[in-house]
Amino acid sequence: MFKDEDQISITCPSTWQKSKELKNRSTQTSALLTNDAEVQSYKSISIEIQTDTVSKGKEDDIDIERVARFLKSVEKNMIKNLMENANSKAFIGLENALGMTSASANNTLTLNHAPLDGQMAVLDISWNASGSVIGVAYGKPDHEDWCTHKGMFCTWNIDRGRINVNKADQALDVLSCLMCIEYHTELPNLCAGGAFNGQIIIWDLSRTEDMEVCISRKVEDGHHEPVTKLCWQETGKNNTLISLGMDGKILKWDVKLSRYQAPEMSLVQGFLVLGSDIPRDHPAAPANRHADIGGTAMGFSREDPSVFVVGTESGLILKCSTLSTALPLDKGIKVQFRSPITLVYNSHNGPVYDVHFSHAHRNLFLTASTDGTLRLYNTLQPKPFQVLEPVAGYVFSVQWSPVRPLVFAATTANGSLLVYDLKKNRISPTLQIPVTQSPVHSLAFNRKSSDVLSTGDSRGSVKIWKLSEGLSTPIKGEQRILDRIAASSYE
Image 1: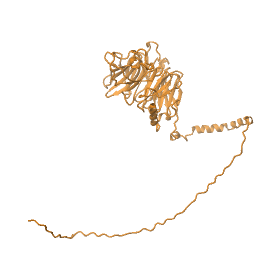
Image 2: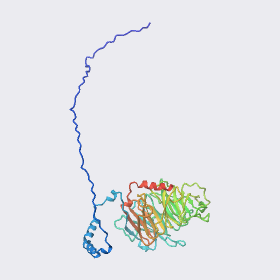
Image 3: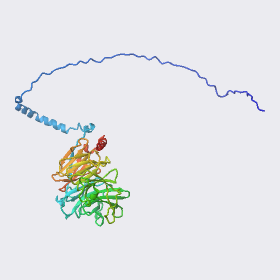
């Protein structure tokens, strides 16, 4: 039915398209000419020469009068040349180009509130969020009994063209000594203060009157002894204020800010440090296991706002957490108090007056104490891995530079301002400036101007210092050095 069959193929050439033809052609460039030649450098010859041997003359052979006449004859020219070199601008910028930095600090402004007549000490200093206004807490540093005199909160706007260095722009009375102050981190007009009587006051300095907008005196579980430290924290729309007191309490306040209503302040969480929280074998463990341990200093981690370190009156240094899950203590009326302690560090031999975390490393913090030492800790290690002894009496305050990871400053009881640069020297201060003959209780770096530093002393004077470029400008590779220093704490 079916069978294979071959079909005939038919090719039809195109009538419109021509067939393609290929042809090969070649070309040749002219031949390249090359030529080799040799050259020879000049021959070098070494020759040795010898100066004549000069015998050392005796000291008696020196003509002192002749030398004196010569020096006197060239004195004017020498002084002239030295002055020309000192005023020359030929080497401006050479230090930075060579990686060298100079270190200095100049006092640009001295502030006093004359009505106090030097009878009150500067106990704390804080710069507002814009860096233009400095707030000063006035009070008495030593109390043998309950406080019977008033304190004061003063402010100066240093950006004004004409500033009255002998009278504050704003001076607000406080019922007792003002122990500490802290400006809000973003709102330049809002400042909180802690008083000797346990009160916490919040001022709104944008108002023309009734600047005191919040006060904690009616809070049942509030502080009943001096408030020693305040720290602002931002939590969404609301703001959190953490307070530390000599009654062993660490309180968390919710501050509600409204454009149309006065701020409201409410206590939302409480912690309590007791003697029973300290291991019995710790050298600084209190004999009374049920006694409250007064807090004198507090610093919060820049990376984790739930982590903070507390320094105490007995020299203890305690790592704490606001997320503590410890069992509630049998104290408090409206707030359940818990122990915040997660680690106990090796202690100082005297009260701890300041704790400050590094902004460049999450685990490093400094402490200052009346035992005359500055200590550098890693939050993960109980022992300090570096102890500095400036031999300047009590050390009242310490603070890292906001821009130089290896620079920090401290103030002492002998009236000195110490500036350390760990890049240059890990033992001795780079600068030791005599601020006054009385103790310098406080210092603060400006939040906006990295080269501005302020100090406050027991005579009521506030001094503004301008740091040199070498201490206020970041240096390449500085972070790596700090990381190596932190790593050494594990060795």
